[in-house]
Each structure stands twice: as C-alpha cells, then as structure tokens.
Length: 187
Image 1: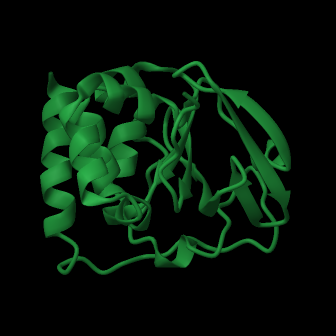
Image 2: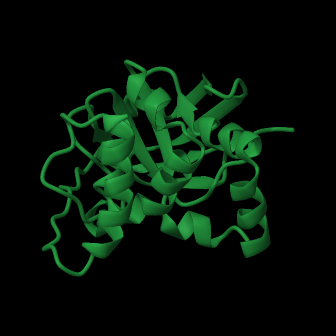
C-alpha cells in the first residue's frame, strides 16, 4: 500500500516538477559497459541524482520522460508486481513512444486492464540484461512472448523497430532501457 501511494505521488509530482528542478544528465559512454549508461538520448533525460537504490517503478518515476509509462503501470496495478521481482529488465517507452500511438488506440488500451497488462508485461524480462547481451539477444518476457535485441556499440534496437535511446539505467531490482516505440506482443 505504501509503495502504491509513493508511486502515485511520484506520477503526479514528476510532471509538475518538470520546470522547477535543475536537470542532470547521464554521462554518455563511448561504448556500453555494465557500469554506465549509453545512448543518444541519455543527455536529454532529466532525473534525480541516483536511482540505484529505488525499486523499478519509483526509479522510472524519477524520469519525467517516463511519466506516461509509470501512469499506465499504476493504472494496470503492476507497480507492486514489478517492484517485488528481484531482477528484471524494463524496456521503457518514453513520451515520444506514446505519442506514436493514436489517441483512439491509447484510449482503448488504457480502458482494458487485461490488454494493458499484456502490453506492459511484454516490455519486461525476468532477468537483468547487460549491454553485452544486446547485440544478438532473444529473451522471454513476463507476458510470455519472445522479444529480440540487435545492434552494436551504442546503437541498439528492440524487435528491429524500437531504438534504445538511453540504456543501462540502474534501479535496485531492475535495469531500464528507454525505447522510442511502444512494443506490441505478438498476437
């Protein structure tokens, strides 16, 4: 219950704080390593100083660019499940990813909790994926379907379509890769 309140408060607070807080940016590494973030979008991510001690959903809520995702997770009542898993990877769609979805599709998704859970859990893998596993990766998602990663250096894609714009963000129980497209599980 406390986690739900904290998460709900973060969902409301994060967008309101956009203009009031000085932003910090992740360091951009020349090549990915398990100890640092990478990707062309890392410098654009505003966040609090360190999310490594926060559970998955609270860590994601620290990034204003992930507020729509966090709101959907809370709406689907998945925050407790995601925060309770010991080692996960989240391929987290950013605001631009949600803007690619039509208003009608998004309204339909948000109004159907079962469908929303299916789509959101397709973005989660029940293990922490390191950057070294991304070049030719194939992973089973919490939803149950396969998800693939490909690329090299700091240029990676998920399912051949979603670009990883900032990767290897650490949370207490998760590794987060911010992506620019909302993934759809296979039908």
